[in-house]
Image (tube, rainbow, N blue to C red; front, top):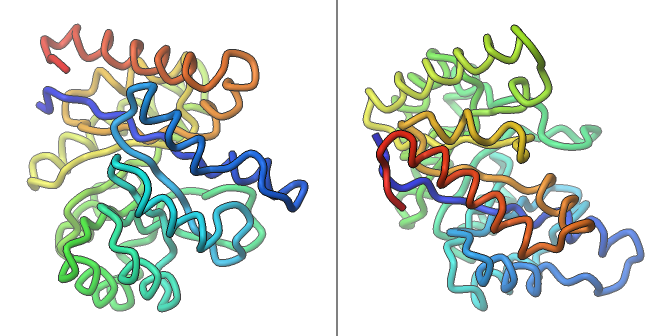
Length: 249
């Protein structure tokens, strides 16, 4: 069981709003400072190949001007590897990336991509960057991540968040079993994608998770409640759920 459950806040969609006007406001760096003051434990930013939200300059400023650990989400490409090795973020989460998708759709196929993932994971690890693989709640994918030497797996929670009734319960059961399996392999276990106020509690109660990464919901909710308030409310929901297990923050 992980006694501490960290909150990583993805600020990509601050950049999405900025880029809608092609100007400089709102600035992701300012959002990152606010996220830190609100009590988050880390910053997540996805530098996509098409630069649809975060830019290279954003990543440079986040790595040099923010004290919180930066989790760089990236595709497994030579270009992104070069950027990661240049800026040396605390962690790199390798995600699947399709040019036409609105957001990351599903987990990485680690089983089918071992040959091209291996040298990228090795290069990142050798440079002191913690490597996380974004995967479905699938035992084979988690086994493959372990075999490749990944330090962390982040389990995709999108299907759980989008489901309802018995289907949501089934998805939650899959996630629980995957988290137990990963922890049994001595891999650090994170979760993320689609989590909101009404779905975070059941995930936070899974004792194997040590970090949740949440972005779109918090940035959207900030329109109504403010970023500080939204993060503090999410933090409270996570802490309350974890407290039921006897864990302490």
